[in-house]
Length: 215
Ligand code: GRF
Image (cartoon, rainbow, N blue to C red; front, side):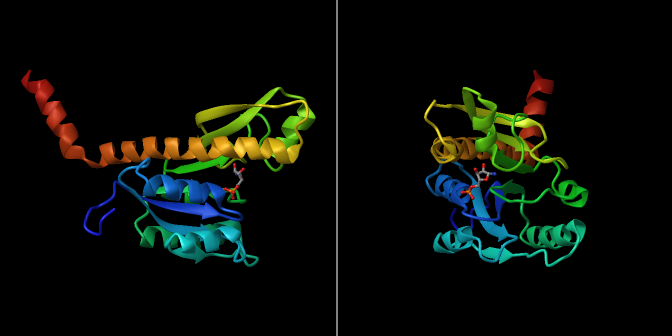
């Protein structure tokens, strides 16, 4: 985005670790697969998250909000403050390892997304790929969903399947699922950004309405 072009959506990405999905989103913004958007901040609850360095290399501002023994509500309040300060429109969880409080969810209604490495509602929580292998399923994959108060719950937006091979271990399956995650998340975020833009440009909607009235 140029300095004076206002993006449809300012995006915050929340991470706790590696940050490969965050990089996939940043790449997609940079190469135009997510138009009219800007990743304005990357927030981590872990000061040593490797993803922080990657964000800085990409020129994205980073903020660390560690929990430091505080309650979920107090911790989330600090994060929400950082996001509101930056006028964030859309929050993308990308390997962020905490369930959000009601207050956080209410601050961004239907504007918080998450990606999970299984075909939800199957295998929520940690080690989803190992859970899939242990469960003996022939297909797994990844899911992007709106976030609610439950662990990896909330309405599903899109999924991509990945075949589970007989010789797969956790690492090989995770690798192939991750490839799909890096494609699916940007696609979904592009759709949501478009919706945010449509909702924001109310006058266009009014014009549409008038057109119908005048017909
Ligand atoms: C991904 O598999 C994502 O689906 C899950 O946590 C992992 C994060 O990986 N929620 P990365 O930090 O994006 O590389």
